[in-house]
Image 1 (spheres, rainbow, N blue to C red):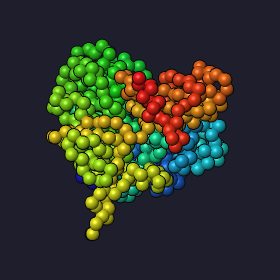
Image 2 (image 1 turned 90 degrees about the horizontal axis):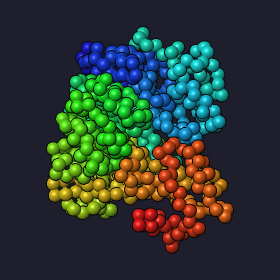
Image 3 (image 1 turned 120 degrees about the vertical axis):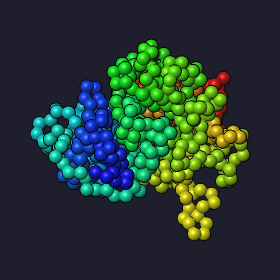
Image 4 (image 1 turned 30 degrees about the horizontal axis):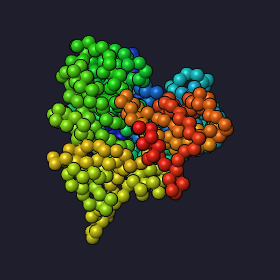
Length: 528
């Protein structure tokens, strides 16, 4: 069969099945499925969604750890015309409930234990019509349950008899919503089109040199843009993906040895742990590349990794969910400028701009602006925040053409004389820890909800292992602040990466002349 043009996200595994049908596509634990089998399962899943009445553009949330069903649900939702919402399984129930309510999820794919954890948030799931359970803890095919229909995966989706999905759509249709923390308030949903994801897969797999000979270890959450990219780039190239729910660092060595892994992408805390492991020389020698994203890799860690993986090319990357990927440093330049985030990835242009929209000179700090087909569609149902970040490119829109929308990152960078970019800092107050973007407001709200604090400010402090560690500055609502009890409350309410590493009690938190907490002064005091 002649490969078709790639329009829908599901065309990545579809074309891989046509070109590399018997080759391994996915491995999870002791189960490996070929591209032929993966595509058959995607077709069966899409047929099941059509049977329960999924309409074009309906949101389908996938709340699972990494497993073959998770991947089938992501690409099968696209094949059926839906919009997939991958949810990080590390999130607490109230955070998951917020996402389900925010984008009016109609179908939820999850496990019975995770569904049970959501029961106290039934009001947030009012839009749900169907919940699909991947385990075998239900009796029967489906039953009414708190306003939605409950289904068993094994009885709802055919594995081999369903015809290819008839839905195609166009590449500008919505494909996915990835939730990322905002600088204020609740997480925001970044809406990606099929085009965003397909062009991203083609671009990244091109500069990484991915091929059917590659075996990629998937260690990042699939709710991350970089984690999802491990699947799309692999399928674009016909490579083999080994799914890993990262728990113990030693498991990385074991899986690399067992599956002859050739490529890994991780965040700095992951690489710091990997660099401390004992690697058998024959296992380390198989790695063709390692890539870093989600923050600057410490120089000592980079040097250690290059000493372990002597035959591997290091790729230092920068990305933002609003544009999927943006820059990478050519491995040939790592010795000359290891602190650089490189230049634009293929089929993207990265500009350094002044506030007035003019271009900065080399050596002059400015805002990183990304233009091209990877620019996302905006923030789900949030025109105000979309207008702040997604803005017309200066100089476009005059005369015959409509304005071109670019994404203004809010990150300050500087370019050298040769055009290599260097990250300077973030304009907003986002905390970047363990590869996650964390909203200080979300942490502060949890602190206030405990009833223990009068005032609270969450800040990120530079940390060599985490990128930033979270510090909470708080004043007591009563006479004294029980910091032990406060941290225990955080652990009950938030995933571990969002729990403050320490709490500093102050009788009164300083404010600026306009009455806001003086975050600049507080950060200076913390640093000193």
